[in-house]
Length: 137
Image 1 (cartoon, rainbow, N blue to C red):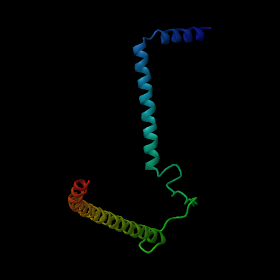
Image 2: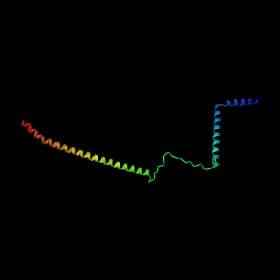
Image 3: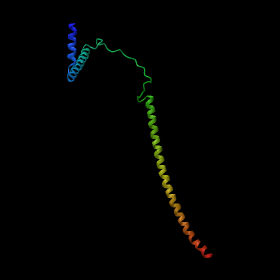
Image 4: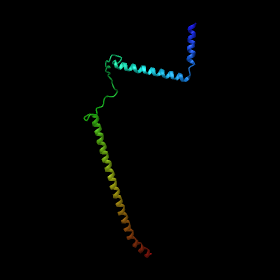
C-alpha cells in the first residue's frame, strides 16, 4: 500500500527529530493551547458569559450558627461590657491586695524592730541582776 509507506516515512521522520526540537514543539503546543484558552475566556466575557449575560441565581445559605449581634445595644456587646467591667474590678482588687500586703509587710517590720528593742532593753536590765546572783553564791 502506498499510503502505508507515506505514514511510515512520516513516523520515521517524526521519531528522528532531536530532543531539543521535541521540547520546542511541546512548548509551542502549550503556548497555542494557552492562547486558545485565553481567547475563549475573553470572548465569553465580551458576549456576556455563556448564558447570555444573565445574573446568577440567588443562593439561600443556612449557617450552622446564628448571626451574632455586635451592635452597641445587643446582648453580645452587653456581655463584653460586663466582662470588661469584671476585669476592671479584679484589677482594682488585686491592686488593693498588693497595697495591703505592702502595708502589712511594713507593719511586721516595725513590730519586729520594736520587739527587738524590747528584748535588748530587757537583756540589759537583766544583766545586773545576774551579776548580783553570781556574787551571792
